[in-house]
Image (cartoon, rainbow, N blue to C red):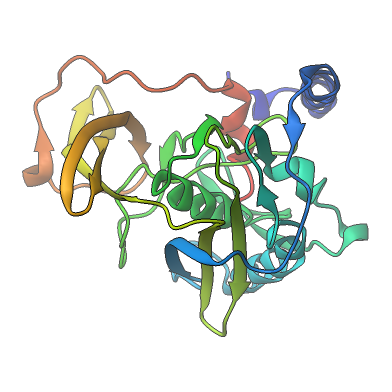
Length: 287
């Protein structure tokens, strides 16, 4: 049974336990945390933009605007942070708990695959942005939780399916570490229609990164349809391919109708990264 269908008291206790365990783990972790902010570093490594408002079936437009407010509230805690060699960047270490008292409002969350209002909803768009920036750099992702559900059909998608990252305070975090000898910096800002982000560095990075998908398909298993793909990355130096690597496989249960012509025969499910089952009742802070 999904944890969101437990008795509400048991659910809250389970969440509180996981949050306490994360707090203890952070205190005992001993990693150097990235917290310093400064003016923009000289060199741009990669830049990306994403739409703020996406019309989707069953999603209240007011919650979309609430999401934008949540992004606006969270960005000052993240933008301008430098990640020096050996430091780890943690989304929730920097942003903290998204509460009404701190200026967060109701935005879109997914619970049991249904869009619902939730305070802090929509912060996943920031995690998606950060993950996409980091994939185009030499930085090391040390914690990322994938979306286990695919609730809406593609609409103007510009990045491969499965490249996002989900959040739920504080035990489903997004973290990356700087294992290089160069300092990097995250910069984020909003325009009227876009979330914009860039990764900068203290020196011109010699490699270029290209992320793309392979083996994309829809497959039916019993009464469910799953969407699968693999994310790959090319690394080039001076235009010459240095190496190619598979980053991960992704698999998510589809919640919208898929034409029969798009389905492929079932096979053994692709391996996906482990994630907490408690993710499903609050598929974190939205899309």
